[in-house]
Length: 85
Image 1 (cartoon, helix red, strand yellow):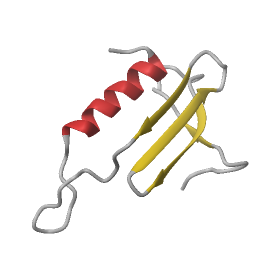
Image 2: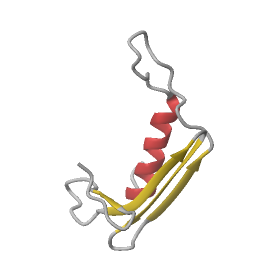
Image 3: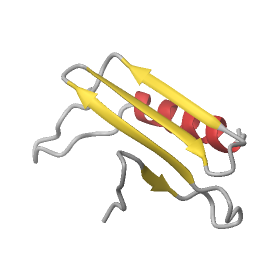
Image 4: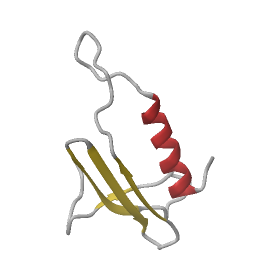
């Protein structure tokens, strides 16, 4: 379940950093997407837009397969939001 209000939803950071809750909103349109998040204490913000969505190929059962873009985006989010490399 996602807690949601005023168009924002929370995303909790690592357990060892209890103050690292981020608030933001993401969305997609056919062919693109965006995500904007800000840390509750105001120390970090991130906004990302991509001009390609749904790039994963499906396997024979119809499940999306991992794509290098997925790993690259997760790395970008981690560095932008938590400063980790």
